[in-house]
Image (cartoon, rainbow, N blue to C red):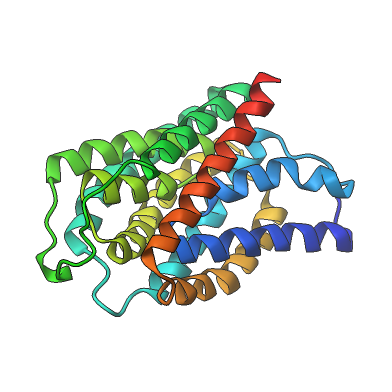
Length: 261
């Protein structure tokens, strides 16, 4: 294992960038960190991580990034407790199943699952949605059975790639469940936190976690995620949606280019 200054700086920077964006956009950050960890280290002459190692590091790190993000959003009425309960319980089960089962999949299969999830999320982010940002937060309602089913499906898929599902939860909450943007960002972080418990457990049990880079990224996330959440409270919701949509689309394209060529 390389513990050079370059190694520490690169891994810390990747963790910081991913966690800042995850806190700002309400996602666990794996949608960003997965391709960063997979493709960036070799550009600095560092050994490349395998897809299994990347998914394991992401799973553990997202847990801590989500804690920091939720803590930053704990005030202001943005956390929908019912949504957290229903989707959180369902996604916890799905994420454990997916993360445990990922140990039996090939490297290419893990990348294909990631590429498929990112593509679905990218398409959903560009689907026209009702203007729900003007409604009072205390009047927000949602379809509970639909929320549960979608959370289980998201949990299984995201558990495979070491994500907690935030990058899919955000477009689902916005487009399908019609949750206001800022409530979506805060609540998805809380559901992501719950999901990451199941995801981390599955990765740890199957020995897919490289502890040292995970620790470096955890430290970065504890610093960056609250800063991102603070920034997210002040940025226009339309801008947040556009940033997230572009990022998800870009990562989906990059992964599929790698898979096909």
